[in-house]
Image (cartoon, rainbow, N blue to C red):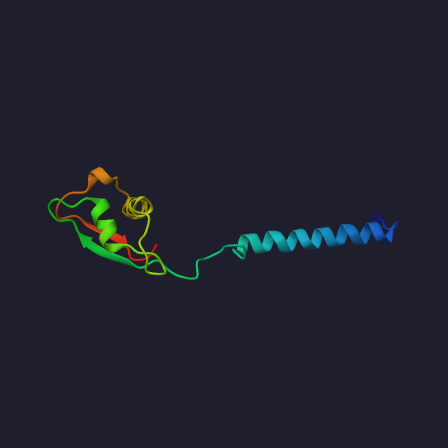
Length: 105
């Protein structure tokens, strides 16, 4: 069996290639390990609300949602969040439904 010997002809080019390969491997490993995922510092707290006769998502959101600083919240965003969290549309709620409503948006 013939053994081929390799020589490094250009040390700077070899080192550049080596560094690129190592950095690429680190990037791929961190991506697969989830190192680049971000998470919110505050978790959204949800309150379960039972839909009463005459309730609309707009009213439920205006009564139960607030911002971090305690001020009022854009009701459109709150209704959108309620619909997304409960996988419903605003017209799908019925009396007796229990829906999750975010406490802080």
